[in-house]
Length: 86
Image 1: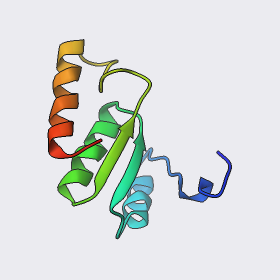
Image 2 (image 1 turned 180 degrees about the vertical axis):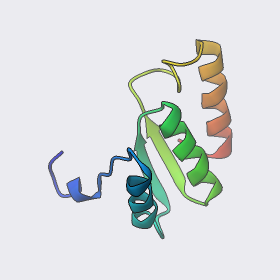
Image 3 (image 1 turned 90 degrees about the vertical axis):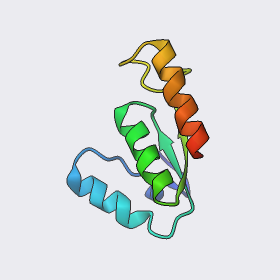
Image 4 (image 1 turned 135 degrees about the horizontal axis):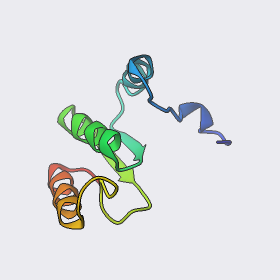
């Protein structure tokens, strides 16, 4: 990625990355999560319960689209939305 915000883009692949991610978002009110798979949904859930409002983007219509049937994905999307996830 390029641009003025490129240094703020983090990927999380292990516990060291996760620790860096948590340190970077200290004091944040909003976070963008790219990907609505298992990790993206878990992050969104963790963040919303920690007082940070996440926005999750994914090319699929529903979260967890590679793992669960459409009806289950819609239920996850609804649950996250009710909790405050965009």
